[in-house]
Structure formats: structure tokens, C-alpha cells
Image (cartoon, rainbow, N blue to C red; front, side, top):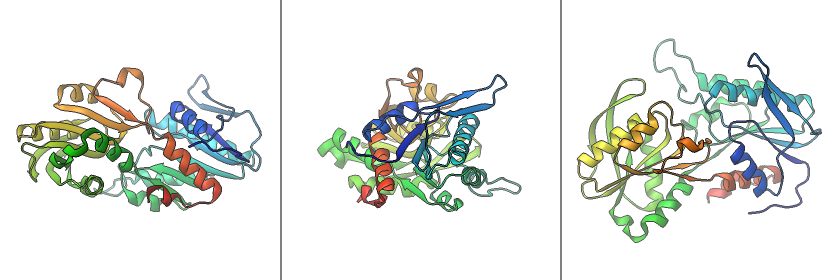
Length: 319
């Protein structure tokens, strides 16, 4: 959708996902705001805003993906620059919200990093946040400013509806762990397909052990559903277990393709035929292996920004 006659709205971007930011601005009929985000020789972030933003409705697009700390600091410093330049309203558009995995005290003396980052964004001067598929929905409550939370499931399910068509009756949605059951159930309901659940034990961080599969997968095409894939240990172990238990085709999908460490090698070596992901995190060319298919989120973020700017309900995008 193309929007015209935008008054007093400006779209800026830091360095994490310039490709997405450019597409969002284009969908809104705008060009990206003039800004420079660089570093000093010692690594400190330098931000320069090269146009007036006094009284403007400003949207800063920045995923806090790898390098997480640099991208987070870029966002915080740009928000501060906008606030000090008298922007009318500042919305932090964070397609992927990093530091989301530590959202509670799972053990004694654990930090709650997701809350700390929320505090930092608020204190920097953001008036609201627009994000997609938080690792835990409760993180919305960590902010003392409005949060608009987009969901990626409609984009993912559209792809599979087009791919499988009438053969959906032979497809099963699979949750790779107990924590993803709610997400997988919502995904399956959109496609009207059954679900299965993998019960696993994780002996330590980034290491998973498959224990049991709850549900029927033999002779079925299966889709593993998760919000994010980091080192790909969980998803590839799950794919191997499903294949060993008689699944005839294994696909996987996620909103956020973090893909750190040995992720690409694991995916290449696994029985996963296709990994579908959204464009919330920029994937450089060397990571765009043949198995990975990317669906753009530019349209839905442009729609959401338009709704916020015009004072229209964002929830209508999912009705």
C-alpha cells in the first residue's frame, strides 16, 4: 500500500537493518531521514541528524540484533538526539528486540535484562515502541510507554497456504519445545491443521536434548514453528527426531533468524528442506543459503506506522 500526503512524519534508521528501513519508507511514500550513524576511532557511537525534526512525528527503525550492544547504543543515542532536537513524538521501531531471553529470574541472582533494556529505551526519550513477536509477550509490560506488538504468524501461514494448498490436510505444525506451544497452536489454527509437541531437556544454554514427541507425525509433512532461531541446535535436533519418527518432509519457520555460531552449518546438514523467516533481522548475502526463504515485513510495519501516525487502531491489521 502506498501512502501520500504525509505531513510532519519522518522515518530514520540506524545501521542494523537499512534494507528494511528503506522499504518501509518507500511503502509510506517517503525517503529516509538524513542522518549519519558512525563511530569514533575508539568505537563510541556518533549520531548526526542533518535535517530539522522540531515537532515531527519521528520513527527510528533499528533491530537490536548482532552486534547487539552496538545496535542498542545506536538506537539509544539516536533517540536522545531526537529528543534534544525537540521531536514532537519519538517511536522506537524495533522489529527484533534483543536481550529478550532473560525476562525473569529463572535462577538465584539472575538479571532481568529485558526489563533493563526497556528502561533504557524509555529513559533515552522514546514515547512509544513498535515491535514484532517478542520472545515473551509479558515484555510489553516492562515498558512504561505504549507498546504496539505485531505478530508474524499471518505472514508465515500465508506462505504455507500457497505452498501446500489442498495438501494441508497432510501437514502437522510442531512446537520444538513446551514454551512454543501457544505460538504453534495459533499458527496451526490459522491453517486448520493439527499440532505435535516435542518435549526436550536442555542440560545447558544453547544445548538441547530431544526426549519425546507428543502427537502423530509419521507419514506427515511437518512445519517446525518458533519465534527465533539462534544457534539452530533446538530446531535441527527437532528436525532429526521428526525425520527419524517417520515425517516425510520437514520445514521450519521463525520470525527472527538470529543464526549465530554454527547455525548455518547445522541447518545445511539437517533434514530441513526449507527455513522460512521474516526480514526483521538483516541477513547478509553469505548467510542467505539456498534453504532459507525470507518474507519481507516492510508492508506490515509501514501499515502499523501509518495507523500510529493517523491515530488508528493497529489491531485492525490482524482482524
